[in-house]
Length: 118
Length: 113
Image (cartoon, rainbow over all chains, first blue to last red; front, side, top):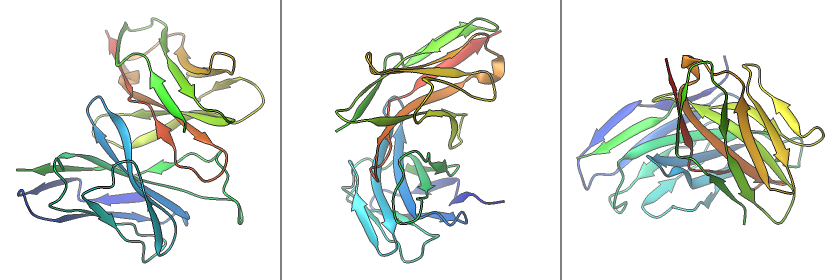
């Protein structure tokens, strides 16, 4: 079955260490997104990518980095510069019709990675 | 830029009672509207969406939402809730083109037996 796989489901790291969260999709979707979820704050956009080798900052990109070397993969690195990294991280993807984006497509989400920094 | 306001952070309701989860959006252009549901420690699942046409949209599990352009609202309703509806619900908006979805802060629905 097609979908988005995020791994690991739970991740513990010591303060000051960089950590990379994996996101893989086999939906042949063009665009991929990373959101951070904190209690009572909804989902906030970190980074997104609409094409391989290109990505854009979202609302809270500071302290994070991404790469998009393959269409199906969009890993997120939480760096030591991120002041409060403990959160639930969600990856999502969507597609487009031909050469044009169509905003009427919703997103497909992965099951998330819960990162705890101690 | 568009934004979404979910007016209630928590909504407790008794089983088999009706419920309404409120959502208002702000945008200067035409939008597409979505409701997502999230069960504990899981990702989000699309519940329903408004694209165009009829302002009342329905999901397969009994939820419905009505787009009201004059009030810039997209409230979610269900006439009779079940225990299994306990979850967090997110309203989201997207304008035409390739801009990312913008989410509200969520409403936690708790159904009480």
